[in-house]
Image (cartoon, rainbow, N blue to C red; front, side, top):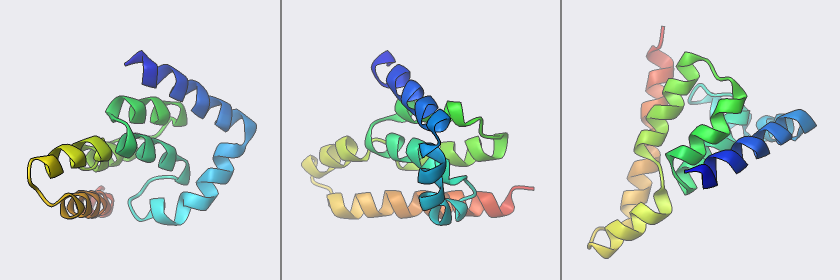
Length: 120
């Protein structure tokens, strides 16, 4: 677990201090706003989608997201985490990997977007 969390936490903190995280956030902001997250959270979302939940947590913690944003990120990643490995395993088991990948990503986007809209 420390293999993912410590380096990603440090990397995100360095990106934040250098101003690069703000630039990344600006680029990702239009898509991330659809699900109620700041653009900077894209690093955490991508980490979770490609690696695992621990990597996502390590990348999201330095951003100091509020309760709503962390809940949305958690819901999104609960549906679409560790995509490479899990899609490969499901494909090997006989499932249509492309369909599974599509459903997980689209389902996560829809669920996070709905949560963003209904959160009071």
